[in-house]
Length: 95
Image 1 (cartoon, rainbow, N blue to C red):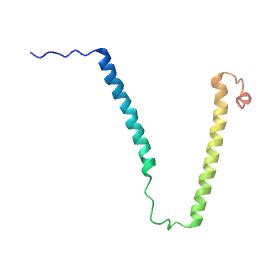
Image 2: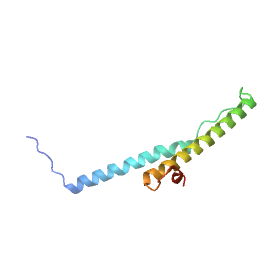
Image 3: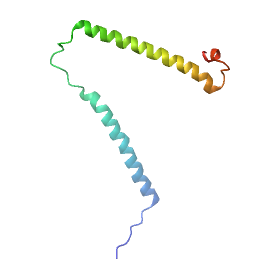
Image 4: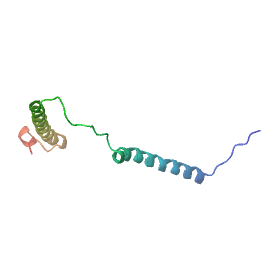
């Protein structure tokens, strides 16, 4: 007949704590590893993309980001007063 082995609560807490401590260590190692190893670098940075097209893309992305953050900031400014209950009108929403 097999007998069940009784384990003390302190022993099971120690095993749980040890297992829980290894999970963050492994996670941290996986997060840090790519920064230590680094990304592969290309042999050459020469590209077939025209310089003018690259410049247009950079300008378009910059302007799009500017517009996005301005609209997001204005929307949060309007909504913030409504959520906190301090705005009584739309004009009060623009703090």
